[in-house]
Amino acid sequence: MRIKTTDKAWLEFVRWCRGHGLRALPAHPWTLAAYARWCEQRLKYPQIARHVIVIARAHLMACVPSPDRHPIVARTLSVMEERHRTPPLRAALFKIEPPGKRSMAKKRITKKQDTEPAKRQASRPPRLLRTAPRLASRRPDTP
Image (cartoon, rainbow, N blue to C red; front, side, top):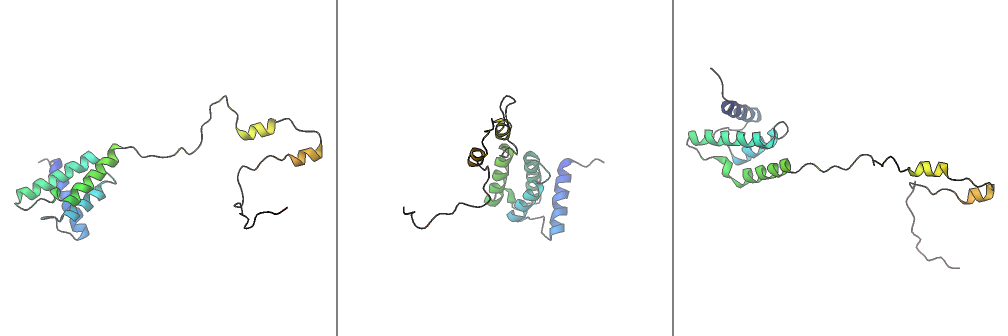
């Protein structure tokens, strides 16, 4: 005898409820929303939606109110669906420069060096990162 996927989804929900000390039938809407959030770590949204439909069908077959129409569950599923539709926004870890451009460090190294030592000390290259924050003076400088 082969176990259907719908039966697997229902049995998984019952197992999850027992593990958390909750009732599977009739399930509270919060229980179904929490289960959907738990499933989000390992399943994609369409599979989670199928699990919710299977749980609702089991409630209807047992003649008890189905928790899937509750606003808590509907809101949880809509947020999950939105997250599934939009890709995560991540910043690039490194700036990728085209091969024709030189970086600032290379420009500083290849820059023509002055021959006078006093002039060389006066024209130090600017710091790229500050080690300490700028301090604001409280009084204006008086000449």
